[in-house]
Structures are given as C-alpha cells and as structure tokens.
Length: 222
Ligand code: HEC
Ligand code: HEC
Ligand code: HEC
Ligand code: HEC
Image 1 (tube, helix red, strand yellow):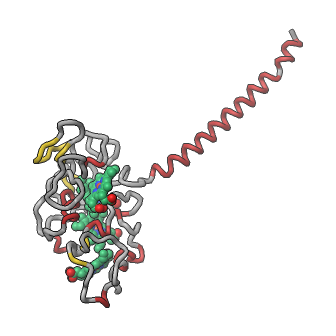
Image 2 (tube, protein in one colour):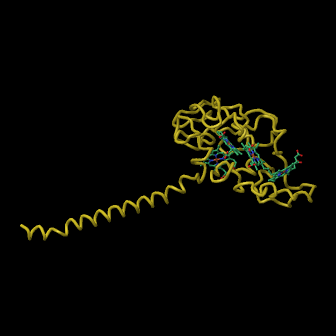
Image 3 (cartoon, helix red, strand yellow):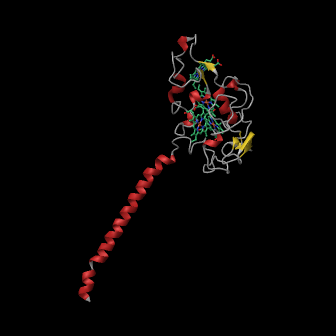
C-alpha cells in the first residue's frame, strides 16, 4: 500500500504542476483578452463612438442594436438631398440648399429633429415616409433632440462656412491650391472636416484632432 502510495506520489506534484499550468493558461488568456479588448474599447469606426446610438451604447436609444440605421437604410431612403441612403427626412434651416451632405448632419445637429427618428426602422415593414421614432435619445439629448454643445442650430451664420466651392478661389494667396481634405462637388461641407464614422478621432475630425490647428491649415495659408 505504502509502495502504491509512493508510486502515486508524483500525482500531487503533477496535480500541482497542472494547477501551475492552469493558472499560467488563465494568465495567458487574461493577457490575450486584454490585448483583444484594448483596441475594441476604443471605437475603431462608428461602433462604440458617439454616433453609435444603438441600445448597446450609452448614447443609445433602447429599441435596436443596429448602428447604421440611425443614418442609413438599404431601402426607402430619402433622395431629397445628396447624402447616401439617408434614413431621415431633411429639416429646413438657414443654410445653403446646395449643402447636400451637410444637410444630412443637420437632420440631427440642428436640434429640431429627434435623433431616433428614421424613415425605415429595423426589420421588415418598418417603412414610414414621415419617419417614426425608435426610442428615446441618449447623450446630450432632451426628448430625443440634441440640446447640448453638439447642437449647431438652424442658423449657420455663426459657424464656419459650408457649401462653398473650394476650387477656383481667386484669393489664391490665402488658400492652398488644393486641400487634402475631401470636397463634395468641389465644395466644403461638414464631412470635409469631419468623418462621421471615425470614432478614433476627437470630434470625428478627419485629421485626428485640430492640434496645431492642422485642420485649418489644410486649407488656409495663414
Ligand atoms: C451619425 C450618422 C451616421 C452613422 C451612424 C453612419 N453613417 Fe455612414 N455616412 C454618414 C454621412 C453623413 C455620410 C456622407 C458623408 C461622407 O461621405 O462621409 C455617410 C457616408 C457613408 C458611406 C458612403 C461614403 C463612404 O465613406 O464610403 C458609406 C458606405 C457609409 N456611410 C456606411 C455606413 C455604415 C456601414 C454604417 C454603420 C456601421 C454607417 N455608415 C453609419 C453618416 C452616418
Ligand atoms: C442620427 C443623428 C446624428 C447625425 C445624422 C449626425 N450626428 Fe453627430 N452626433 C449625434 C449625437 C447624438 C452626438 C452626441 C452628442 C453629445 O454627446 O452631446 C453627436 C456628436 C457629434 C460630434 C461631437 C463628437 C465628440 O467627440 O464629442 C461631432 C463633431 C459630430 N457629431 C459631427 C457630425 C457630423 C459632421 C455629421 C454629418 C457628417 C453628424 N455629426 C451627423 C448625432 C448625429
Ligand atoms: C472647416 C472645418 C469644419 C467644418 C466645415 C465643420 N466643422 Fe465641425 N468642427 C470643426 C473642428 C475643428 C471642431 C473641433 C473644435 C475643437 O476641437 O476645438 C469641430 C467641432 C464640431 C462639433 C463639436 C461641438 C463644438 O462646437 O466643438 C460638432 C457637433 C460639429 N463640429 C458639427 C459640425 C457640423 C454639423 C458641420 C456642418 C454644418 C460642421 N461641424 C462643419 C471643423 C469643422
Ligand atoms: C476644407 C478647407 C477649409 C478648412 C479645413 C478650413 N477652412 Fe476656413 N474657409 C475655407 C474657405 C474656402 C473659406 C472661404 C469661404 C468664402 O468666403 O466663401 C473659409 C473661410 C474662413 C473664414 C472667414 C469666414 C467668413 O465668414 O468670412 C475664417 C475665419 C476661417 N475660414 C477660419 C477657419 C478656421 C479657424 C479653420 C479651422 C478650424 C478653418 N477655417 C478650416 C476653407 C477651409
């Protein structure tokens, strides 16, 4: 029996090393999880950004886990302006009618329409030309409308101009001959400076940030 027991002695050792192995594995898995989690915890694209209004996000409305639906729909979008597959009706306001892409941003940022109102809500049979609400709004919103500092308002006289041609400026000495930022039909629009999908950038700026006024200096030679 004693011999048998001693024969089994290595088992507790093996058990211990198995334990050591197990905890090593656990540590490794934790490190792996952390490595995998870190990039996820910073919004790569629109998911997890302030433009992710889905119910899984803090800025979200409760009704859906879909992310794109607050701005785009595959079918039945509004064609009144030139924004891609836009899932909201456009608002009026004191801004250039030609500012097609910019009017898309203003369907939320002028503060007049609830952010959760869409033309074609998730699922089958969700279409309603006038738009319907999905649920109440989140961050910076009251009654679903943007009210905080992100409210640009309906009068853009106090904002950087939009909807004007960049190409062919006569004040050549004041502007770079061309800009690295995207123009829309040669015009400066909200989406020239901002990429609404770029969750990694502060205030969705295409340049990442405006440190050193790099956004301004992409166009102005001041
Ligand atoms: C908060 C509003 C908003 C959300 C949410 C959003 N988009 Fe957009 N998207 C826009 C606007 C505004 C434009 C037009 C301006 C531009 O071209 O960047 C656009 C343009 C696009 C374009 C065409 C131009 C390009 O960049 O290729 C695609 C494709 C697109 N979005 C896909 C998506 C997908 C997929 C999602 C969800 C994962 C999404 N968007 C979520 C606002 C949004
Ligand atoms: C579906 C509604 C919706 C549309 C469309 C939309 N936004 Fe937003 N946006 C929001 C909400 C909600 C917030 C968060 C407001 C807050 O936190 O106070 C936000 C925040 C922002 C911010 C601040 C981000 C930050 O990091 O603090 C910027 C900049 C912005 N949006 C620009 C744009 C631009 C430019 C467009 C068009 C290209 C656009 N948005 C289209 C709803 C929208
Ligand atoms: C010429 C570039 C440019 C254009 C065009 C532009 N923005 Fe901005 N926007 C900025 C910069 C730069 C900031 C960040 C300011 C800062 O970080 O100090 C900003 C900030 C914002 C913010 C955050 C709130 C604030 O005031 O700081 C919102 C919301 C916003 N922009 C929406 C819009 C919308 C909507 C449009 C179109 C009507 C637009 N922007 C057009 C450059 C621009
Ligand atoms: C994409 C190019 C572009 C970027 C980026 C840009 N601007 Fe401009 N800006 C213009 C153009 C073009 C005009 C001329 C508009 C006009 O007179 O029709 C202008 C006009 C102005 C004006 C005069 C406004 C008026 O009402 O006459 C000021 C001030 C200004 N920009 C400051 C800035 C600042 C500050 C930034 C950075 C936050 C910036 N701009 C970023 C292109 C740009």
